[in-house]
Length: 556
Ligand code: NOJ
Image (cartoon, rainbow, N blue to C red; front, side, top):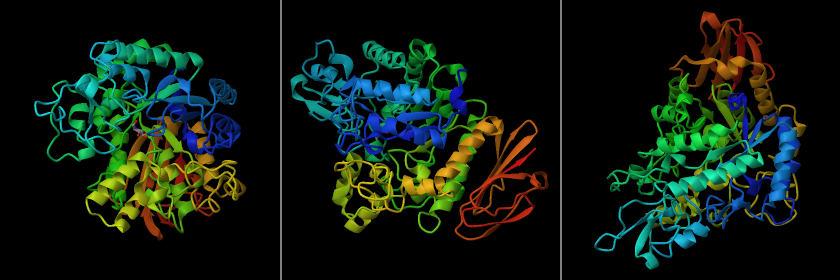
């Protein structure tokens, strides 16, 4: 069965922050292994592991210095193999992060590449002569601030880095680079891994005419003009598919910033033999401001509904959606899209319901299943993340007030997703015996796995039920998505249809009671799941929804 991933639910583990068994304050592979029964209880099918390879950790592992080695802070290759085996024994697959747009500047390839213009690895990276006045070849900014080009004296050239200067971009035009990547992928597949999440894969092909940035581009993304969905990206992925992916029954999900639903079809149409699905960012962009993600704008439900519906509609029968609210680069779901105060539990369950009943493969980011919310750090000095630090600098230089900076960093920093999971309610919260690599969230006494598991009405058990429903109802996997009441100001409703079955999903985004009306055709549908204990068991024409109420009905 080659499309097993269509029926799967993926759980993303951010290894640094999951569970430490060695006492170094950093989560590790043995910690993940120890918690597999917890994940099995939740019911997930696949774990996506953020990078665990050898790395100087300038960007928490997205700067890889050796693709074949495990970073010793997480354990050994033997530990990895034991984890993979233990997961497989429980019927859980593991996909790895494939970070091949760039390496670390400490990778052997780069160390040699930068030495001269005529060594074996000279063309492994993107080197360009300076302009006549010594300036870089283009005016592109890098994601983490400053120019995307860094000068190296030994070659009298600049190299390209779309991310930190310690993350030089690989030159995919060079067939030897591609072969080296394919070889490495093969070695992980031969070990038994079940797929890859491909980091910024839409950026690997650069325009060879090296255009200047568009005048209105946000500086830190101004390289998009020459790097996003570039001229050869589909050719490269088709080659990768032919040479590697097609040999294995694995899943792939490409991270594709700046990619429209039309372009998504090019990546995910099964007839094109590229990727199984992609992560798009259209719903992430709904609250962007002048500093991109770092803004205090609140999204509008109607915009969210438009975006989600567009992706459901466009990919119907032509591609496949990945469904996510959050990951290690995004703030916490319930803070961003729900109500993390009085209705934290209700709104976390509502958001889970809305997403998990859609067509596509759902992803749960660690901690989402216990309703973790953004982290109210006291001081800006507590943030560790390279992107957050760069953004704090940029906003300070732009003259923003400290209060404003603190607010938007609290709302959007990647560190919101990166504080350790609290397994228990006290001490070091069962995460470590040592000092955690990043401060704990002050919320841990309230929001932790132990108390969540003790409460039958917790967010965890709602996720567990949603996952179980996907397994027992084919309509959730295959059914056609159709929006209902597209103009309702507070409620997002849709149906999924397969043969004679219709699933009805009704989710309120309001903190107040609201009325909702459904068409005759749906009246009488039977309740499958709700986030309240006293919801109507049969769908009536007129209903009154409680705050953040989420209802799933089935009409057969
Ligand atoms: C996307 C990853 O998710 C993010 O964490 C990382 O900083 C960049 N790509 C660069 O690899």
